[in-house]
Image 1 (cartoon, helix red, strand yellow):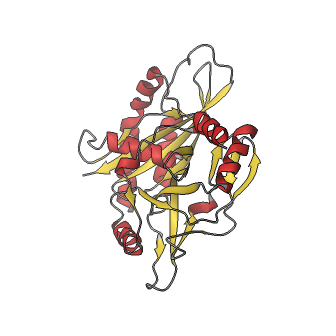
Image 2 (cartoon, one colour):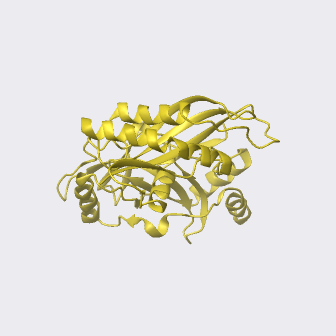
Image 3 (cartoon, helix red, strand yellow):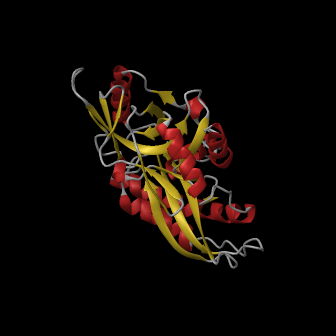
Length: 294
């Protein structure tokens, strides 16, 4: 058993970049306070909650081991019901051997902890259905990360979403130079978490003026003055040609603005040739953008 746990940790453990900045929800009144705070929709806060015992690991498919979410995940002795926004799957990268080790750990009492935001994807939608002390409060969680832990706080597995990466980049660039509606481009990353080449990052920064115009038009329509957008670029690896630009996430509440930003990054920049030695013909790059309007 100990060997299986060690194997899982060696294969899957990664640095926890955000735990120190997360708000831990350990009481029902703290959950209700978080739901109330989310109503101002000005600042995204990262929350952490532990799922009640009884959760299950589902199928292992395409190198991912998923947590069963056929029903909402209960927390705080069933007083909170976690509804994962957009029915997004909760899972971990794992080969067959690691999946077997994690299943064994789950049977031995491993704990499931979730990090999430409230109102990140759709700031115009009510993130919680708050009920009285004797009712079940439903929380619509925009997933940031999921992790499995032993009883001794040893992390066995962790997965992160683009929301968390956008939030971390947002915090690193809180001061966006300039005045009025404008945007800052965070650190672009590949699907495996690796950073984009510096030449590509510099090329992406050329889209800032166009992004500022997109945001000015969005704010005029009633878009949130502050928010985040993540654009996913599909790129021809050798030439650096952007083949497609799609909106992966947006907290602006204005689809035309998010699409405008995607176009600015997709057709408004020239990345140039990528590093040599890549085996893949095409690569996906997640580009986080922070928008402000002060």
